[in-house]
Structure formats: structure tokens, C-alpha cells
Image 1 (cartoon, helix red, strand yellow):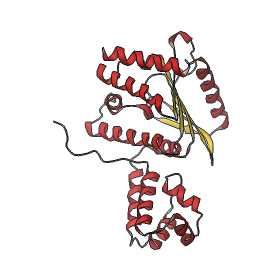
Image 2 (cartoon, rainbow, N blue to C red; image 1 turned 30 degrees about the vertical axis):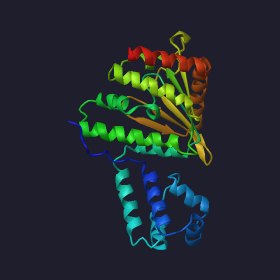
Image 3 (tube, rainbow, N blue to C red; image 1 turned 90 degrees about the vertical axis):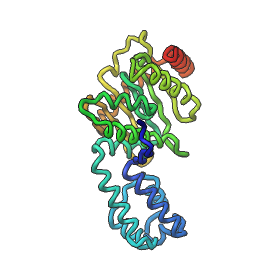
Image 4 (cartoon, rainbow, N blue to C red; image 1 turned 120 degrees about the vertical axis):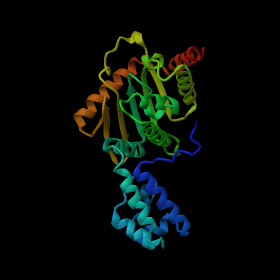
Length: 276
């Protein structure tokens, strides 16, 4: 029996509080410029907090609560998001925040479709494979993954360059219907102005990157960073040598990957095969 209750939206903690701050500011009839003057902050900093690109500390929240006449409401929302943040794995919360700040994401996946490009059913199939996981935990993880994907829909969201091993397109995940839907979704994403998908073909014989997936992130006001995925967790580092090493691997993979049109054609062919 399907659950008629809608799944709650899950957001990265900074994004969640930023949305609350914007709502309270608008309700108070204040522009960002006015609130910035009242708090002694720059307009850009207010804007960054509202977009979830900058953390809000308690002193700032208390001052904003008073300036907007929120009667403790904004402070309560901040405390809720702080408490909520404790339920995210530290590395996942960090990754979501990095994706919010970045203007470029470059990812490689040798085994599965990258999380930012997964359909709900594909993500559900991936999470369901974890030992001893409950159905509630699966749905929580799926909702969190879909919320992460919202970063790609922002007006000023990051550009995503994704390289997938050809095996990702052929590996059965969930069911034939799940795979057909996922392949069709990847093909449709070719229309997105900031999403670029390439496929590394089997006949490239390239072994670079077989050790694991990664995401390279860069943007103004942040150091270049890399997320390294393992079987049980993720590691994020801004170590320049590690970033340089991973960037070299990405460039090797990109050079051997099929061009965009050829990649799209292969994805469409696999969508048809899974459908049939």
C-alpha cells in the first residue's frame, strides 16, 4: 500500500536556514540592503546566508531575529536546523554545502550513476542494497539525495561535468524498468545548459579511476576541493597535492571518454535496450 503522506523536504542545513531567513525578511517587508544596514553586514553576506553559501552563527541569528521582529521564531528555526544537521553524516553535510558554493563540479563514476543525476527509483534501488537498512531509512536517503539535486536547478547553479564508465549503463540496478527510466533521464539531461555527460567506453582499456569515484569542486571564495568515495563513507580534502592528483586522473578520463554526441547516442541506445 502506498503511503499517501508526502515525503518531507530535506535540505542541507545551511540551505534550510537560509530559506527561513529569507521568508522572515520578506514577511517583515525588508530588502537585503535594509537588513544588512541594520545588522552591520554587507548585502553580499546576507545574500550568501540566504542561499545557504555561508553559515549563520548564533549572534547573527539573534540580531536578525530582533531586527525582523521575529519574536524568537527565527532563532527557533536556526536551532532546528542545527539539530537536524547532527542527523547528517559529517561528510555528507560538507559535500552538500560544497556543492552549494561551487560553480564547477567534475565527477567520475566507475560503478553507478552519480547521485546528482539519479532518478528516485534508481536511488531507491541503490540504498536498498545496504545491509540491515530499514524502509524508512531508504526513503529518508532518497529524499536527501533528491534535495541535493536541487542545486543544479538554481539560476546560478554549478556546471556539472560527469564521466561515466560504460559499465554504469549496462549494470542491472533495481529492474529493467528502473534502468530504462534512468537511461532516459540521462539522455534528457543533455538539454540542461549546465550538465555535460560523457561515457568512457569499454574499448578505451583505461584503468585510471577504477579505484573509486570522485568529485572535484571549485568556485569563487573557496579552495579547490575533492570528494573521494569509498564503500562505507566519503572523504573531503582541499590538500593541494591530492586535488592535483585527482585532477590529472579526471583529465585522463575526459581525454579517453566519448564526445558528447557519441555519449548521448550510446545512452539512448541503452535506454532502448532496457525498454525492450
